[in-house]
Image 1: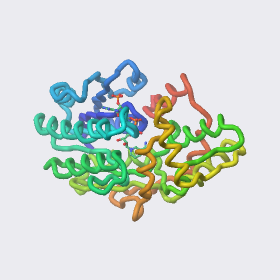
Image 2: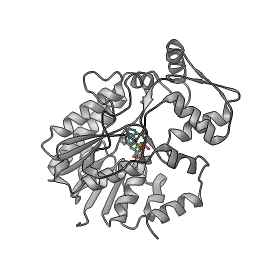
Image 3: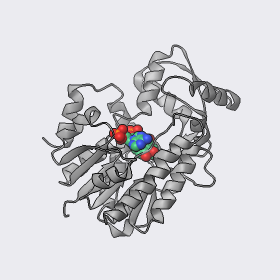
Image 4: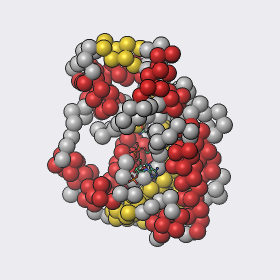
Length: 317
Ligand SMILES: NC(=O)c1ccc[n+]([C@@H]2O[C@H](COP(=O)([O-])OP(=O)(O)OC[C@H]3O[C@@H](n4cnc5c(N)ncnc54)[C@H](OP(=O)(O)O)[C@@H]3O)[C@@H](O)[C@H]2O)c1
């Protein structure tokens, strides 16, 4: 396989860090665009990575940023916006994707891999998140580029913000843990399987024009996942599944808390099951990992030097 020059937008986030490490292992040259280079210098331990500060919403800056790449990967996504009217989602998902497509065309880059999400649906998605993800996905597939979209369920890995967030909440909440949307369904997929699917798609023409749902091997309710997290931590909490009205109220209140830990848009997203209709797409030849084989290894936090060592290990240095 010939090494490519791959530009990753959104490459500094949870999925992006894993994907960059995986692609560097194959010897690809990486141009990782970020709005804040100083905050992500740890990525520079990857031997073939360039970390480039870029105002990705500025069309000229974006064209410069992707210049010289033969593959572009767009991972940008937000779970919550600053306001409450969907404009933030539209800007990050729809407008930026439009600019990425147009920059690819301007620079004659044909191959585009795009991160969408399970439940993305331009018309019928119950949340701004899902509708904007759906619009972006549709634009990518209709762009005329050699495009591939990925629609994962919730993604887990040692530095995820799902199990780690619930672990943090469970540790700091004494006795009773009120859980909104307890019956929402997920099929968590391991970040290594997601990035492997991206990696194998790059040179596979059979994936052009396709959109792939990515799930782990088992489905769970949110309540089962939170109980599982508590068990791994060895903490005993009374997990109270809130009725729908109380879930909505919790969303309404927490969207005004610092960092917006839960919002009405998150609540709306959980109305549609985050699970797949079939197994992991055969085209990738991947047997997805279960949470039971991975999560027990990482619920203890990794900090400072350990993070650096982790990237060195991934980069085999
Ligand atoms: N994590 C999951 O469970 C999950 C599940 C389904 C789908 N997804 C999708 O997978 C993608 C990656 O998720 P993740 O968990 O890795 O996210 P993340 O850790 O929050 O990273 C998001 C990345 O996007 C960039 N970004 C964030 N807001 C932006 C904005 N307004 N404009 C431009 N760039 C922005 C950030 O780059 P800089 O700040 O460096 O510029 C960062 O690298 C997203 O599209 C997400 O919707 C994730």
